Length: 498
Image 1 (spheres, one colour):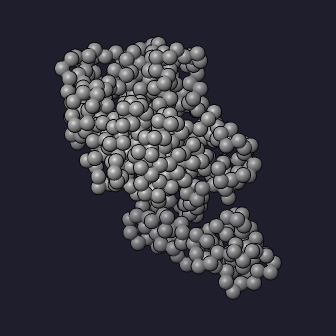
Image 2 (cartoon, one colour):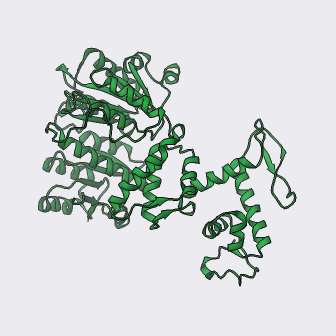
Image 3 (cartoon, rainbow, N blue to C red):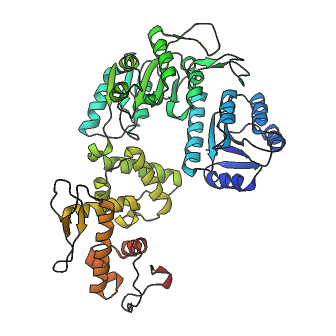
């Protein structure tokens, strides 16, 4: 499969090259230094999958270039790049038809996620109206991984909803797979041949969300150069998925409520009433009951969308599924990267099982991808795991050292018989990261003292690998200067220093 083509337009070399460097590994990237050059490239080389366009350029401004691009290729996704202080032009660009915007200075992860999302949505739009040759098999939900009791309840509820048009509210923490459930509801239903249209309410500025949902007429506002249909119309006969609906402004909530009740909409700036036929699926990571009490979410809308709630469990509540998810993501990224799929050592898998995964399945997915990118080992050990997981491991070790108390803040006490213990109570909370760091520091220094500075022997005393010991010494600023290391030769540049 050929790489997606990205065109970057920026008159400044530094941000232009930064964007190229961030994206070049995954995409075919071309850069241009001004609007006329970019337009000439578009004419000569055809449409690109995504255009990243700087707002402020000499000569031909970003808005002028955007207008020309939309004349040349109205459906080409254009992402505006702007300084944080230039919010108004960015809003104008979005109203003209820009797909999204990015702020300078760049957030690397945000850039990648925005491009990835746009490419994904463009692919879905190309599928709209095209008969599918590959039908998903009934209720197998092959894209959803998990066989534990918690997920079985979710599968059972989804199956009961497949033959209905009942509105569904999917509730769960960020990263639990709410969109996967929405897609399972759509692609296993009678509406599977029609569009599935996702709208990320949190990613669209509030003043533009109404136009995104209901569309607008030409001239409805400054920059509305042509009529544009909204997602309600685009999803006709299919499913409209409103992700993070709790982020929707109150004004848009009232219009959404009317659309649900009356099954009809009006475009922004229009007079015509348009009948709609969509199945509505919503998702949120907020407690909408509390949002209603605080006046941030309309209670009448909540009752309309909460017809059948689906509660997705956090990953820490279904640990039995973690090995299956690890195997699935390892196979997936191994294939993408063209490398052998590694195995996970028992102690590494145990560490993954003990980690609380606050980012849920998405965090686990990214952790496995990172492991396969930076580690070539055929067996993943504890020493290969990301530091945040190892830090949680250290916290678990601290907790195991002393019976739980109500909630005192604890200070490190003195060594007792060569071992560490937690000392006196001085308050009503515990600074666990600081406590963990202090305990690790004392344990490592004691092991180095007992081993005479021999790293291999110190690592054996601590029951960790020598590589992990060097890593922790570097992180904590522990040196072994002045120690003889003749029994454990190490390259000079491997020795951490304070």
